[in-house]
Length: 257
Image 1 (cartoon, rainbow, N blue to C red):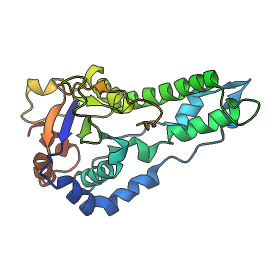
Image 2 (tube, helix red, strand yellow; image 1 turned 120 degrees about the horizontal axis):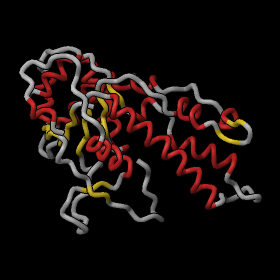
Image 3 (cartoon, helix red, strand yellow; image 1 turned 90 degrees about the horizontal axis):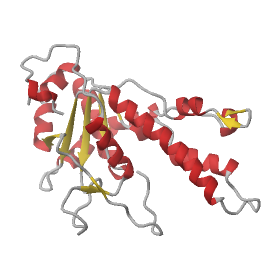
């Protein structure tokens, strides 16, 4: 990763609606990229143990991308529309995890149905489910962190769906999504890598650095430090989309805005 952006959508702006309207049809192609080379959980068994390396390779395989779009599950349509706009306008490869990887909840259900049911087959064993959830979530988090590390630019979609306000718990920015919390934290702590190409006019300062919530479970609000992400407004994205640049030069234009 080289640079991260906090894309804040202005309440008074209809940019998100126009983005979905204009690029909604193109964004559907993201769904066709979902990796379907997944096998039944039994195919990953070897000597009574699960081959986690092969499981992660099939369900959360690394893909090549220029831009990682971090978003709330509720903002998937917006993330796909932004990704479609960046690919159409700039020929930039965008990564949206829900459109590429197998759903971790689907994988968990398959594992739990195979290994975690009680003898009655009506309920799950609590301890076994905790262990299976830990393994799957660690594989997913590891894969997400690797993708962020290998992607040059990260754009966090700061919307009412991804952020929590007015909780009364703290004055800090918060999120109820553990995945958003983990992704933004990763952008703060992983190494920053200067692109090998020359960025014209680049300044040294440029190097600065969803799981569903069920009714029976209280929401966990995580403090979200966004100070290390460069603030990006929707009108600036519109100007960027009009720049006429292509490929990685489009990212260079964004960095120098």
